[in-house]
Image (cartoon, rainbow, N blue to C red; front, side, top):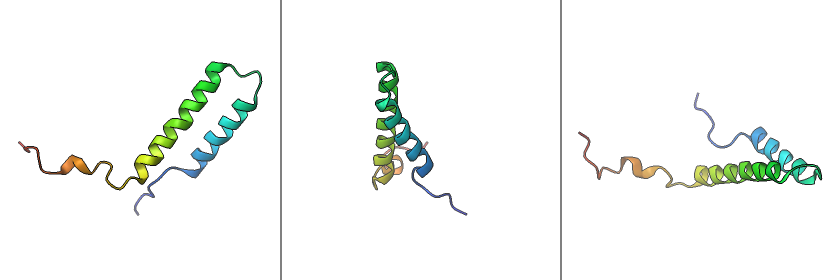
Length: 67
């Protein structure tokens, strides 16, 4: 059985909830908010790479010697 590619929907939901909760919390520090934003941005970058059809295709393009 082939593993389903893509991002786990539960992970996406958890990060979205964490982002909303931390941003709505007046007691959350700027550091806490920055960390959650960073996680959300990293998730978005991974999502974009996962949906890009040519991402990673240059690894075996045959231009380099295979010694």
